[in-house]
Image (cartoon, rainbow, N blue to C red; front, side, top):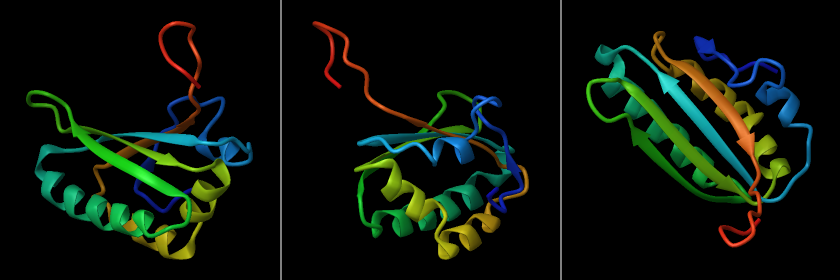
Length: 126
C-alpha cells in the first residue's frame, strides 16, 4: 500500500517499507529522510508536526525526533521508536494517517525505512 504522498523513494529499492511492514520485530526504529524545496520548509514542518502528533497517540509509540541538515540543505531526517513493527504497521496503515500524508508539499520526497538494534560487543546492545 503506497502512501498518497507526492513522492516516496525507498531507501533500499529492493526492500521498500511495504515489504518491511510484514516482518515482525521488536522494538522497531523508523528512519525517514525527507528532501524538499526550500520554499516548502514551513508547510513541511506544519504537516510533519500534525503527523507526529497523530503517531504519538498510537499504541506502541515510544519516541520521535526530527533533524534538519546542517547548512543550506532543506533535507530532514526523523526517527521514531516503536514497541514493534506491528504497532508501527497499524499506525502507518491507519486510514487517518493515510489521508494526512497527502497534505505534504508536492516537492517532498520521503524515504522511510525500518531498522532494528544490533549488538556490537563492547560498543552497544541490541
